[in-house]
Length: 491
Image 1 (cartoon, rainbow, N blue to C red):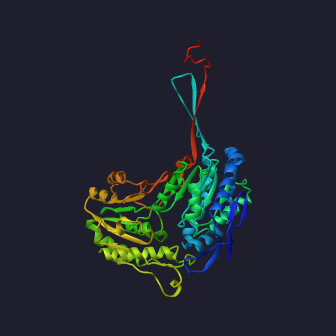
Image 2: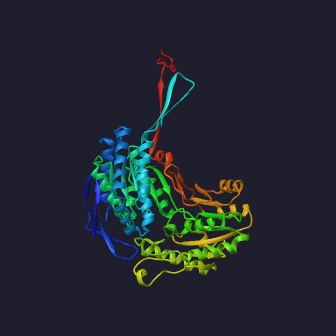
Image 3: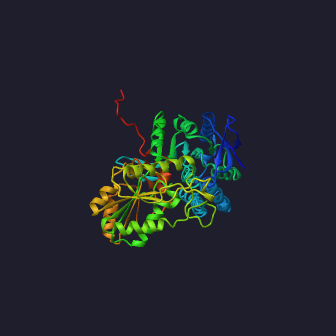
């Protein structure tokens, strides 16, 4: 069994209490690790280590080339341990090996991307109506608190850690209390490459204690959080004490719009991928499938036929296509929404139950589920379920499709499927969401911003925008004609 400790000021250490948290493999309920249960005192020690490292340590004072060198070494370590990290991610989160493998590769690529990006020119000069040389420079913010979810334990950690370190900040990082295994492995790499003391600190523990302490601390200059919208509101409240900068990537209820002229089989295939990849535990999941009225029956029939063929099982089984939910609590939440959908009057067309018997008995498995004959006010249509549950809605024309697509409080992602290029662009431009696709779904790139509208978040991850999140902008004005200003009379 793995024993997971915290990493503070360049050293592994136990927590300031004797409490331990058992880490469960969601496929079979077995305990795979014991993690130190961090306290507010542990968080404070990490914050002070990061503060000292920022104010006095070498990391913020290194050249961009030196910092890039460290990031490349981390990428090399990830690549060298690809198979091990993939296996650990599957044990910890439950996702199939092929999904975990993609995540590990993407994590290495993200470090490489930001290692290159910080070497690109990013200052600017501008003309002003004076004898003045005016310029803008970017500087690190300071101590950054990074709080990540359980659905992408390694990858979403890297989405925050790589740009934060690249910019010259020091970090206090909290992985999800459910999935800290690959995060611990990542910090082993930091230790092996001798990342300067205090530059990166990791505190394990619950959000209501460790996460709260990080978000509320006056010594933390920025907090970046990915998770549910309700928790995001708490982060905002905690962060208001010192008006720290916040970056929040929150929930979604994303529309996947299928027009009658779309490539039918491709649209069905992507609709399945949009909701059942990651067992639906993806913030950008295409959980609302909007189908043009004229193909409704044919599309839903084919979708259900394909959904019933999905191989659900343990992530380490090579034939598994969809794994378990991450925890008993998450499974219970999803089953609650399924029962609620039936109570609201929606028509259950596939799934709708926990999978039991044989290899399923001790895991948190839910069958791929879908509802038809829904109405916009239903909670299963409006609220994020975060599981393998699709809801079908139908529309008659572009205007109705757009109205339905935008009819939630969320605005994270959305897609349009049609063979009419002009229609695709007309509709996608009117979707109030930050991440959109045409004739595809779920494509994510280090080069492109990950950003939500409405209650799906504040700020951006990835791309140049993700680096900017972790930097301050400073203007410098250099007088080229030094002489008394003469504003006040010299008597």
